[in-house]
Amino acid sequence: MQMPLLAVAMALAINILWGANPVAVKLGLAAFPPLWSAFFRFAIGIVCIALWARINGIRLWPEYREWPGLFVLAALFMTQIAMMNFGINLTSGAAAAVITATVPLFAGIFAHFMIAGDRLSLVKTTGLLIAFLGVALVLTGGRIPDEFTRANLGDLILLVSTILLGGRMIFTARLVSKIEPTRVVLWQMLLSLSGFAIGAALWEDIVWERVGWLPIGALVYQGAVIAGLAFMVNAWLIKRYSPSVIVGFAFISPISGVTLSALLLGDPLTWDLAAGTVAVGIGLIILARRARYRSKDH
Image (cartoon, rainbow, N blue to C red; front, side):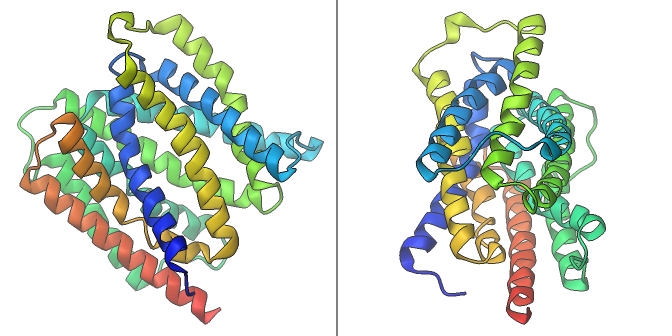
């Protein structure tokens, strides 16, 4: 499907922005612990999406039959986001960017079992294996670790979070076939917000002496830019072009995340991190090209 230059630029931009999200999370965690970070991020995101719905005349209150699916989605959402923030808090921003960029791979595996007609082909499996090799390089540094470190624990927590996100994406895809997408996104945030607030109030303390423009700006970025603007732009693109074409730009995210982690967080660009980033990018490209061919066939 042909895309005008403006649409291509928009798709590239939102994937660069998504790649920077783990960096923003890392910066925000300096002052706001994981659950407080999630609470403030999605409070901002809820406002942005509610405004988007208001402008577009989208009804936000769910029908009675929609509530069970939304509650299940909110539980998945709250668990996955909490694990993501805890994992990023323990590992480097660069490693987080590569690991979280693999979500299309796990979504593909869940889709194989949950969505009729979306099966894992030989080409798709090859893409998955190449990308998993990249993740393995990032997790192990290219060797068997001598000891289990704080970063190793963070990487594993983040990997589980990314697997959950892949499953959540497929569950969401099934919901939006019956429920308006904006309503789904808004209510997964609204229903989880009280859980984040209660957990944060019970177990976490904001580090007030570190609160400044950088952590606050990072939270605004996560809420307004990622949960708000990126969602709106992605919805606009998918409405006008094939989703499989838009997914083809996902390989930009790990490159963006690793580069920005080096520039903003001072994370070293080691050989295993570079090799892992390249492998994940190649795997995503293979998956996206396969999806594009399938969309042309159908």
